[in-house]
Amino acid sequence: MKTEITKLLGIQYPIIQGGMAWVAECHLAAAVSNAGGLGLIGAANAPAEWVREQIREAKKLTDKPFGVNIMLMSPYADEVAKIVAEEQVKVVTTGAGNPEKYMSMWKEAGIKVIPVVASVALAKRMERCGADAVVAEGCEAGGHIGETTTMVLVPQVAEAVKIPVVAAGGIADGRGIAAAFMLGAKGVQMGTHFVVADECIVHDNYKERILKASDIDTRVTGRTTGHPVRALRNETTRKYLELEKAGASFEELEKLTLGGLRKAVVDGDVKTGSVMAGQSAGMVRERMSCRQLIEKLVRETDGLMKGCGCYE
Ligand code: TUI
Image 1 (cartoon, protein in one colour):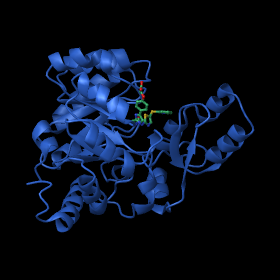
Image 2: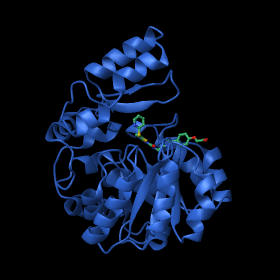
Image 3: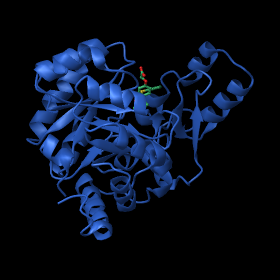
Image 4: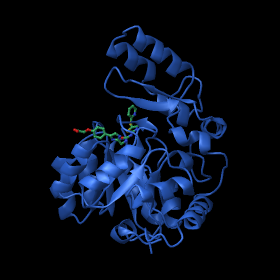
């Protein structure tokens, strides 16, 4: 399954694991990379030294390329940006912002840079400032999202830039991967399905919520604050949406979700915590290892794509 993405990153399959906050730590990242995909450590809002330790641990667990996702709204983003260069991380992806100011530092360090974008405008800007590829993430994805669906974002981004495009948002099986290739992508990024992987350290309650989710079980909170976040519906999303409808202030809304992701991931409080997941949760039915998942995805995709010319 060779594409511009596998060649760029030196990996076997063009499947990237999303850099999910609190979820994507070194064990998950290493398991995905060992299975032939690209594992990511999610720096999220974590202190920079935690990220350095995670990078060093991942290097012990795999000799394959892996990456770090930098969440640009983090107060530690500047420090983490330096650490990935110091530690000679092979790949950096970014989310929730524009990473332009770090680009020359990363390129000088020989890092492959793949910003996550939710619009054609940012994709073009990233190409101009030296990005090696972009992840076009549709609003089916979990966590912080943009406005546009994967189905319409990916072809428009693919048409607008020459660098390879990775599709993300709503992809959980071989049908989604085949569809992404048809839309012009050269690879995919998946988050939600990797949350239930055996190697993923999230609380079992979180995994069970995803496994039991149906097609209509996610909600988007924070549209009024300018920070829309998709998560599985529960007591807190219901309260949040009611407050938003009633015109609650930013501070009041923030109070409701502060520390919510940690609560769900670490403590297993899926009633009041933030159970971030994409719409593809409804398609995630089985637990398996990262290797089994990636082999299943490749088998399904191959069956659908034989001889299409999208990959060698
Ligand atoms: O970043 C994500 N997903 C995330 S980050 C995150 S951490 C968090 N935790 C608690 C509350 C809120 C966030 C959870 N999920 N995905 C990548 C992504 N980036 N999606 C959308 C964007 C994006 C949006 C606007 C990127 C750039 C942008 O505009 C930048 C600009 O300056 O034009």
